[in-house]
Length: 342
Image (cartoon, rainbow, N blue to C red):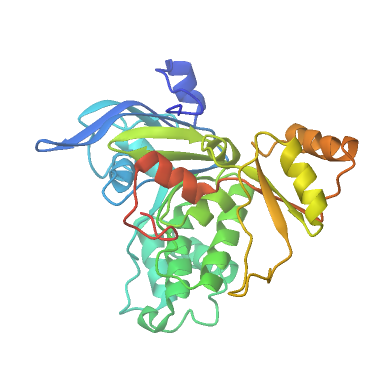
């Protein structure tokens, strides 16, 4: 299996400068434990980039380095055209960060949280109130603005958290597992917010424990494992790395099934033929699985073959590996549920 869809290489200064976020050979260790072992990233402006990996893979460490919260032990990193090591103030002026845990102060109201952020960004009182009001309305928090943030639901707190991040009008936003703990409705609402941010020209660097989230939102995805990028590409490119795709042909006519089975030399044995205890079939459907990469060209060839052989399948379905399959194949993880990988 290839280690990467798009092989990473050391890029020149021009390439780094043209990206919203770029790293070359980024390294970080804690004692004798190497957390990041030469990370190369190139994230275009106005895109969503998702970083996946098991618990402890180093996703949050990457975010902390790029947001100047900690320093790297080696390599180079540039954010919004600024070197993270030599120009941290320039980086901070261009970014917003929403961490795994909400930065909302529950003892004050939502509006007061927003005004506090406006003060931290040195906005005038009138400008701060205007920005706060606009963002509270944008995130559907106007009615709750005068209530203590401790009374907010998890989804409301997350929306307030991101609204606070946007007070400084950042060009790049780091969202470290922004939907962890949210119910499905709140998660989908957060997805819509992220899409709107990108439509407005913001670059989003996303770490997530939900593979569906990366599939739904990200322009490009990287899988981090053992301190290295195991693979990087679009969701479709990553899925094509993993074998196991197939076309399933289902028949109700046993003779059609037998003709298809004898003619197709590369199909597997029937994967389903259910019988009752008396030996009478309880499901007359017979099926064949044909290995396939899921491409339009290959599907067309299968349909052409069926037509030329005069065989009619009652149902044709396709299965391609999903990001769950990709994740477990690349990280060797088997101890976590597919929907909750960190």
